[in-house]
Image (cartoon, rainbow, N blue to C red):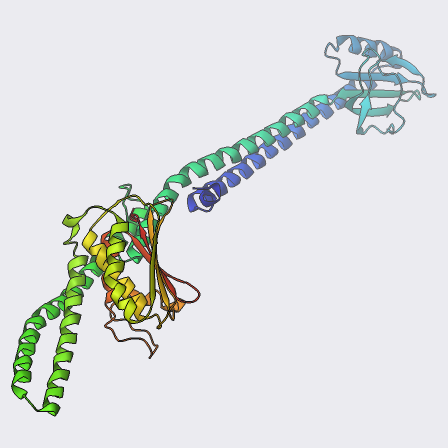
Length: 454
């Protein structure tokens, strides 16, 4: 289960969306708090400067220098700047070394970098105002604004770390919340693949949490129950018809056989009787095949499962079908690797392999070849039956496994379209997998001999 799969879940996306939304709200809230706080702090600093301006400008000129000196001594935190400069710019009294040249003396408050004469440090950002006195001197009053800068840095760090941690925690919770739904979706997907493969008895898993997936799974399970019931009714009708008609057809064949014996030297009538016998035999074979498929699909042969060796079964099947291949001058060969024994029904596996070999020989022209291979893969044994025949079109490879399916090729040999249905019933009984592929030319039929159920 990869991170990319988790990130595509609805739970992860909703969690991420709400995390981003909450982060945005936090950033907006902190930004608003910073703006309001900074505005209020600036207003108070400016208010202090205005009060100092009113207090100092109201003093007589002969008391101003003493008051400036006393104010500097009272400033234990060293956050105020005072300066009284003569008309020529010379410092009369104060803790400012020089008069800022880029600030006009109009009584307005400006921002400027100030350096206190009594503190050998870096210039500090300050709020400063200059006032021209009646004597021609210039009064400078400033207040350190470094607290505003430090407060802004604190808020920036809070915004960065708060937003980052919120998004990170949201991602972690999104991944955690997405893991269980995605695992359940994978389980549902596996069961659905089994159902699509024909195992209609499978049902979607329920967690018991009664969430959306449980609601959907419960609805699908009820639908599958109804589908299985309808399919069972339709199948039972076909099985009952095949079973009920087999007895009268057997009797009909016996009557035709007696009639055939009584005809004696009447060639025309005897030929007609032979044709009727052939048609009755064809119907009996079809009904027998249908009942055989029903028997296998009803899992009545599970009790016969035991440890079997595929190599021995393949050798028996090749020896059994070899005379048919010789009649058509088809080269039949077999190669086998050492494989682990499997658990299954040897007679049913023999029947399935013989049916596949019979089809391969039937659809291979005279002088062709059929190869049987037994391989040991990473997951288990694999049987390949490869012929050099006409092949099966890619869009028909799934359809030929259905009952009574006959391709549109008029040159196909006669048959009932039930042999591969018997093969599929045996494959499903063993929980194996079967597929057709191209052999260029011809067809490759493969049986993967390991369980594919959940």
